[in-house]
Amino acid sequence: MDKLDNKQIPDKPGIYIFKDKYREPIYVGKAKNLRKRVITYFGNNSSWKIKRLVNEAREISFVVSQNEANALLAEYSFIQEFKPKYNVQFKDDKSYPYVTISNDLWPRVYVSRNINKKNINFGPYPFIGAARRSLDHLINIFPVRTCSNNTFERHKKLNKPCLLYEIEKCAGPCVDYVAKDEYKTMIDNIKEFYRGNSDQYINDKIQEMKSQSDNQEYENAQKTKNIIQHLENARITQTLMTANDKNVDVIGIDIGNYDVVLTCLIIRNGRITGEIKKNLEPIDVNDVETYLPQIIINMFENHTPSNEILISHEFSLINVIEEKLKQKWNKSIKLVNPKRGWKKDLLATAIEDAKELRRVADLKRRSDLEFRSLSLEQLKNKLNLKNIPYRIEAYDISNLGDKFRVGSMVVMEDGLIKPSMYRKFHIKTFKGQDDFKSIEEVIFRRLKRLTNTSEQDQSFRRSPDLILIDGGKGQLSKAKGVIDHFQLDIDVLGLAKKEEEIYLPFSKNPVLLNKDSEALYVLQNIRDEAHRVAINENRRLRLKDLDIKNLLSIKGVSDESINQLIIKYKTLDNISSASLNDLENQLTKREAEKVFNYFSS
Image 1 (tube, rainbow, N blue to C red):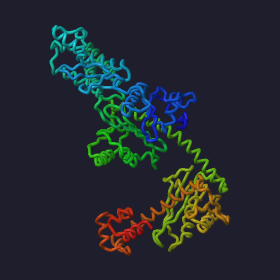
Image 2 (image 1 turned 45 degrees about the horizontal axis):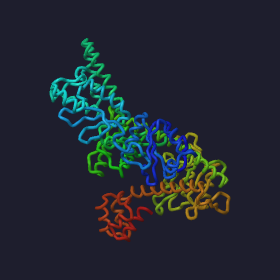
Image 3 (image 1 turned 45 degrees about the vertical axis):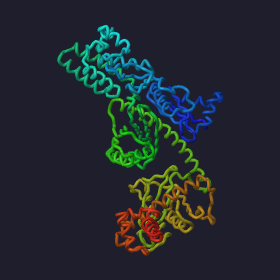
Image 4 (image 1 turned 30 degrees about the vertical axis):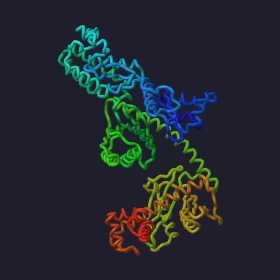
C-alpha cells in the first residue's frame, strides 16, 4: 500500500490495524503517538517482515484512546479476537493480569495472569501494578481473603488468623471471624465495583461523610473520606475494562459544520473486538432526527448488535431504532446515553475516536475542495467562460402533455450540490406543452428576482456564474435571450443528453469534452440532479391530482387488476413507488408496464 499523508494519521495514543484486501486485520499495533509510530513502517530501511506486511496491506484503520494504557488494552482485545498472522506477542490470555474471584466456599480475590473459566475474572489490566493497586484499595473497604488455599488451610488448622487480619486487610474467614452472609455481601460489592458500578458506592459515601460532618462526627467523617479516596483510586484504571461477560456496542457521534461522523466500538466478553466507522453529509447537520435513526440502523445491517447500545446523543426517535433492530434481530435491544461509570468511560473513548475521524474527514474535505476547484478551473478553460463557475444553476422542464408543467432550479457551489438552494417553478404564463416557452418563463422569473433589490430569498439573491440548461440550441437560445433582456453578464450553456454535446451561445458547432473529463462530470452531475428534481415535482403534482377514479382510467388496465393493486398497496403513493418487478408479481407483464409508465413517464 502507498504511504499515508502524515496529517491523516492521528497524533494521539491508540492502535493501528493493517488490513488485507478482504478487510481482515493482519497486524495490530499500539502506540503512544500513532503518527510517529506508523510512518516508520514506510521507511526505506524497514526489515523484510515489515516490507512484506506493508505490501500485503490495503488499508490502515485507527482507534484512538485516552491514554497509552487503554491503547494497550485495545491492542490486546483485537489480537485475541482476530489472531492477526503478523502478530507474535499477546497470543494467549497470560499476557495481561486480571483481578480474579475464585470459586471457593470462602472466595479468594487475587491478581492472576491465568484465566480459569470457573472463576470470575475482571480486566485485563494494562500493567500488573495497576491491577494490584486497584485491588489493594478495595481490600481496605471490603476485607476479603487474598491468601492462597494452602495458607488458608494452615491457619484454619491453627485456629489463628494471619497478619493480614491484624492489619485489617482480611476479615478472618479461616477462623470464622466473619459470618458467611456478611462475607458474601463483601464479595458481591467487589463484583459490582469491577462491573463498573463504582459511582453508586462513592456517591453513598459522600453523602455519609456530609452527614457525619453535619453531626460533628469529625473522626468518622475522616474515615469515610479515606474510604472515598480508596474507591476513587481503585476505579482510575477501569476505563476500557469491563467484566468478562459484558457485551455492548458504543457509538460516538461528532457533528461538524458540514458532515457527521460516527464511530462504533464493538465490545464482546469485555473486549473491543471490532469497529464500524461512518461519514455522511446530510442536508442539515443539525436535524439529527432526520438522519441519525437510519444511519444507526444501517450500522447493524450486517453486524449483530448486543442487547445494549451506548450512544453519545439523545433524541426522541430512539424507540423507533430499538423497534427496528428488534424486528431485524429478534431480540430486545436498548439504546442508552450513560451519565457515569464504566459505560460513560467507554463512550468517552468512542467520542474521542469520532473526533479524530472528524479531523481526518475535514482534512480530506480540504483536499477535495482543491480537487473540485481544479475541475471548475478546467470547466472555465475548456469552454472559455468569463469566470470560474463557483455557483452553477441548472434548469430542466418536466410535464405530462399540457398538464403538470414544472421547472427545476438546482444549485452547485464550489463543486458541491446544495439542496437547500433548490427552487421549483410551476408554469403559469401560457397553456399547452412548449419546452422552449417553459424554460424561457422559468429563467425570466428567476432572473427577475435576482434584479429585485428587495429580494429576501437567499438562493434568488445570489448571482450564478454559470446557467446550465438541459437541452440543445432551442432551449439555450431562449435562456440567452432572457439574460440579455436583463443585461446580465452570466455565462450560459446547453447540455444535450444523447451525445453529451455542450452548446455555447453564438457557436455553430457543439463542444464534445473527453468522457473522462472532470469538467464534463461536473456538468452531468448537476444536469442529472435538475432532471431528477423536475421529475419528482411533476410526479408529486400528478399524485396530488389523482384519486381512485383517475387510476381506474389507465388505458389497457382492467378494473380487476386495479382492485388487486389497491388491496396490495393501499394508497396511490405506494402504487406509484412500486418497481416494475413488484408490479409484474401482481399483474400481467403488459399491464404492469402500463401502470409503471403511467407514474414514471
